[in-house]
Amino acid sequence: MPPRSPAPAPRRRPSSAASAASAPETGTAPRHFAVIGAGLAGIACARTLVQAGHRVTVFEKTDRVGGRTATHDSPFGSFDAGAQYFTVRDERFGQALDTVPGVFRPWSANAVRVLDATGRVSAASQPTNEPHWVASPGMDALAQAWAQPLLQAGNLHLNAHVVRIQRDRLDAGQWQVHAESADGAQQVVAGFDGVLLAQPADPARALLDASALKTPLVAAMANVVTAPCWTLMLAFPQAVRPGLTTLGPQWNAARSTHHRIAWLARESSKPKRSSVERWTVQASPAWSHEHLEDDSERVQAKLLKAFGEVTGIRAEPGYVALRRWRYAQTTQPLGESHLWDGKTGIGACGDWCLGHRLEDAFVSGLELALAVTAQFPSPQAAVA
Ligand SMILES: Cc1cc2nc3c(=O)[nH]c(=O)nc-3n(C[C@H](O)[C@H](O)[C@H](O)COP(=O)(O)OP(=O)(O)OC[C@H]3O[C@@H](n4cnc5c(N)ncnc54)[C@H](O)[C@@H]3O)c2cc1C
Image (tube, rainbow, N blue to C red):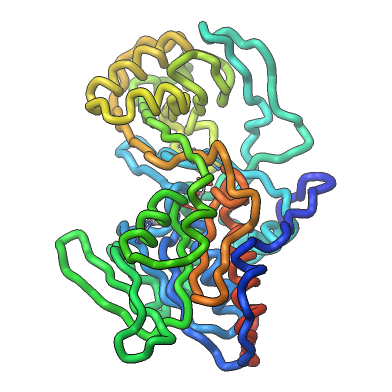
C-alpha cells in the first residue's frame, strides 16, 4: 500500500450546475453506458460503473489504453512520454492502487532540483513528505492493470475513434455511438442509456458540437484551458561503460526555468527500468504553444540544443524520439469534479475538471460514475 500524503484536502466538490438542474430518474435495473476514452479518467469511471453492476463499453481511438500516461518503447529501454510520476492525496485513489500491488514503485524524485536558465541548481524543490511513485514497468501499467477486466470481457474497443453521438433511431430514450478505425472502417453501437466523455476538454467539446447535442456541458467546458507540450526522449547507450554509468549532472529530475525547457528526468533512475542513460525532456508550455505547428526536425534540434545548455551533456544521443501533446496540461480547470447532465444522460470527466495530475483524472472519473449510479442505482452490485 503506498503511504498517503498527510492531511489530504477533501476532494469532493459541489456537484455541477448541470447535475443540479437535472431531474434524477429512479430505477434499479442495470444500465448500459458508453465511455469515450481509455485514459485514467475513462478507466476509473468504467470500472466503478461495472463494480456497481452496470454494463459499460469503452471506446478508445488509439491502439492502447492509458492516454497521457503513455510509455514509449525504444531499443534502449522505455520512456515515460507523458506523466512522469504520481502522488497520492485522495484516499480513494490509494484504495484503487491497493488493488494492483506490484504495479507501482517509489521513485526517489524527492531529489528534484530547480535549475536557473543556465542549468545551475538554484533549489531542491520537493517537500520530502510527499512520496513520488512511478508505475512499473512503465507509466501506462496502471491503466493497463485496471483495464484488464474490461479488455478480457470484450468491453473495451481499441482503434475506435468516436466521431458522433446520436439518439438511437429505434429508441429515442437511448444513444448510439459512431466510431471509425484508423483504416476508415465504421462501426455504430446502439442501446446506451448514457454516454460519458473521458477525453481532454477540447476534443470532448468538439465531439458534442459535431453531434449537435444541446447540453449545458458545452458551455461549462468552454472555460477550461489546456497547454501543449513538446516532449523529447534521448538515449545515450555509449554511456554504459565500466566506471561510467551516467552522463552530465548528478541529479535525476529537475524543473527548469530555461525558456525552452520546463522539466527533465533521467529515465534510467526510475525503479525497474533499463540502466541505459535515457532522458525525457519536456518543453515549457509557452515555448510548446509558440512552436506547436513547427516541423518536428526543427523542434528536435532546438530542444536538443537547450538540453545541452541545461545539462552540459553535449554527446550525440544514440536514439532520439519526439512527441507532441496538443492537450498536455490544464492551466485553467473546470473547478468541479465532473459534469453530468441527468436529463440527457451525457457526462464528462477528465483531469481538466480538477487540475493537471493523473490523480485528478482518476478522481474525476470516479466521481462521474458515482453521480451516474446515484441516478441509476443497481441492485446487482458486483464485488469490487
Ligand atoms: C507531457 C506530460 C507530462 C505529465 N506529467 C505528469 C506528472 O508528472 N504527474 C501527473 O500526475 N500527471 C502528469 N501529466 C498529466 C496526466 O498524464 C494526466 O492528468 C492524465 O493522464 C489525464 O488522464 P485523462 O484520462 O483525463 O485523459 P487522457 O489521458 O488524455 O485520456 C483520454 C483518452 O481519450 C482518448 N480519446 C480522445 N478522443 C477520443 C475519441 N473521439 N474517441 C475515442 N477515444 C478518444 C485518447 O486517445 C485518450 O486515450 C502529464 C501529462 C503530459 C502530457
